[in-house]
Image (cartoon, rainbow, N blue to C red; front, side, top):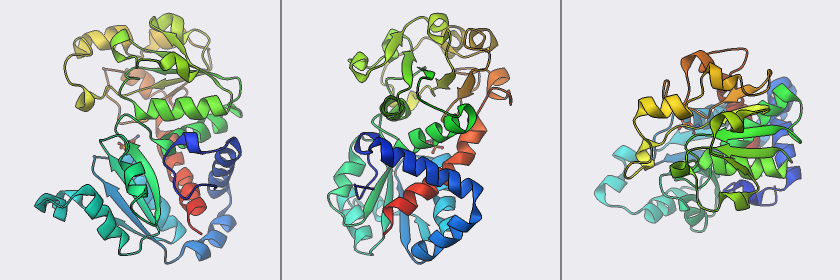
Length: 303
Ligand code: CP
């Protein structure tokens, strides 16, 4: 990769994206490649530095690092010297002094991985920063689409729900546009980011119109932790008007597939009947492919 870090999908060329996805596919299909790469990565050190909760990203980075033969440490932020007042930058510089090869950072403030990348000499991976970006989620979503639809170019992809607070939406919009998908967002006006039209997406404020003829539906989690004030009516009303249920899913193409980055709020943004439909829902497949994509990213960043 041209860059030392993975901070944003914007920094990746189309070829780099295709290479990451192709290597991830190889990790899934051919054990021999994994063994070759093991020699390069054995003995390298990776630190997971997560200031925000995570199940999927944290665990899959840990599994990915271990499968490649690296040592991977999950720093326990809650019991670290941060609790004694050590700053974010001092924490990163302290960890950097122990010579890790990669620092994987999640934080609730947009821009923190960028800031830390300027203070350390190892590679930094953005594992989700505020409402800004979640690049490895977009990469694993692309691999999931590719494995099921055999292409991304020309597909109609709808991203629906809490677009305003979603780093997953932003990274996916950048990536899907780079790979020539047709992207639309469907959400209530209160959850629509200002200026989103400039990101080359079509905006729909009517869910049934927005779902018409789509190939892929990416449902987003309502991010209550990032909401100050009232962005949505009651959860019951949100589900009625904006939640994906069978009746609304039937407006999309007959073979449309449903994705969600997780964790899901059942009965708020998605109905269990849709989330658990193994013929239509790719939610657990996304989790599975996340390990291979993160192996591919780690391998690209370690020299
Ligand atoms: N999709 C995602 O980032 O999930 P986690 O918060 O569990 O890591």
